[in-house]
Length: 213
Image (cartoon, rainbow, N blue to C red):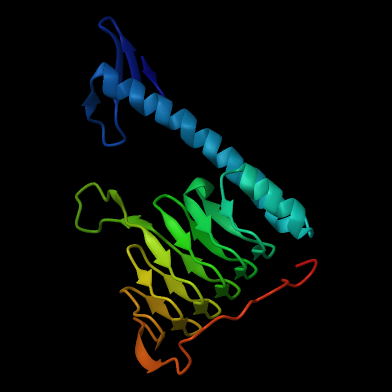
C-alpha cells in the first residue's frame, strides 16, 4: 500500500522513497521524515512572520517578533513593512542599518549585513539557488556579506556568494553576481563598476526610519 509519494507499506514492512522514486535506507528515510516536519514548522514560522511584517505598523513590535524568530538585529536598526524571509535564523544585521519595504532576505546560508547600511525598497538578497547542471536540480548555497556604509538601490538583486565591500554603492535595478570592492559604484545587468565613491572616510549615522512604514 502506497502512503503518499514517499512511503510504501507491504509485507516486507515500511519502505521510504525520495522524490525521484529512489528507495532509501531506514536511517535516510527517517531523516527525510524529520526534515519534512522541520520544514512544515519553518513554513508556519515564516507565515506568522509575514503576517507581522505586513500588518503591524510598529517597528518595535516587528523587531521583537523578528528577533524571537531568529533574526539578529543590531541596536538602532529597522526593517520597514513587507519584509519576507527564508529561514530568518541565518540573517545578521548590524547597528544603525535601515532596510526598506518589501525586501527579501534569504537565510538558508549566512547573510551578514553590516552597520550604517541603507537598503532601499524591494531589494532581493539570495544565498541559495538551484544547480542548473545537476541532473536532480539540487539546491546549492553560498554566504552573502554586505559591508558597513553600503547603499543598495531599489529593486536590486544580490545573488549567492557575493561580498559587497565597505562603502560600496549598488544602483537601482542592478543584478550583482560578483564581489563588489570597497567604495565602488556598480550598476547594470549583470552589475559592473561604473564609478568610485569620492568620500571614503565615512562616519555618518542614518538615524530614525520612517514611522508606521
